Picture: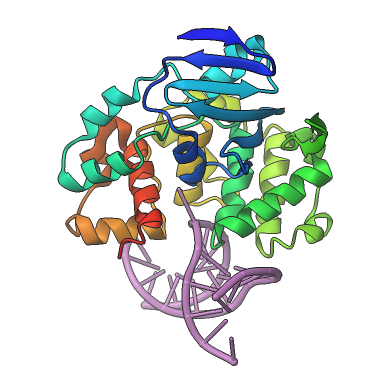
Length: 280
DNA sequence: CACCAGGCAAGCC
DNA sequence: GGCTTGCATGGT
């Protein structure tokens, strides 16, 4: 890929199978907002970034060439050939339709702690409210960042949150999830749960470790594995996906076996398609 | 006013 | 093991 400087940041040429709209609207992350001009601004890995594109040319503002090489090239998973993944996954008419619809999705590499807390908050909740609660958490405990005259907040570190109790989180109005957040924070910050190490474990072993956190079940654990640890073979099952599966696949269907090493990518195509087209 | 939203733990069997 | 129920809050 070719990287060039622009007046306000950098641009990267020749990136196929990429749509910021699909990446940010498919439900994998909660901290990017679409702007009036179609660009997306958000915070990831402690930096504010503005993303826009003209076809295969990607524009990133607010970051340096070094930030791109060290963080955002990986964050957007730009070294992975999603065309190849899609051809691997073209195994039935429905999945082909879903991946044509969400052709530009990439699984971003979110910070594991951010993914853990975010998907704990997501349970039994709707996306606008999930975003609102995460945003409030960042504003209270995250590092302040400035970009184009506006203030943004990084996702708080485990250290910044260490010691919180449910009362401290009352302002979030996150309901019964507050206790879950506290348990996750304190297990991570104390070192009892080592996310870096968990990311190196085989998927099943890693999931087992995540399940030790109060408030983390199979679905949340799988989202952390897929979105926070980039384990692309993991297929999180939520109410939407279950609805899609029940409509399009046999009752005793094993999604992990069927979709194989890129099951998680298939999950995102189907999740996005299912939600955006109001399937069922 | 019900009912639901990217589930989960606890309590039953 | 599997099945049921309560759970906080805000939006329709």
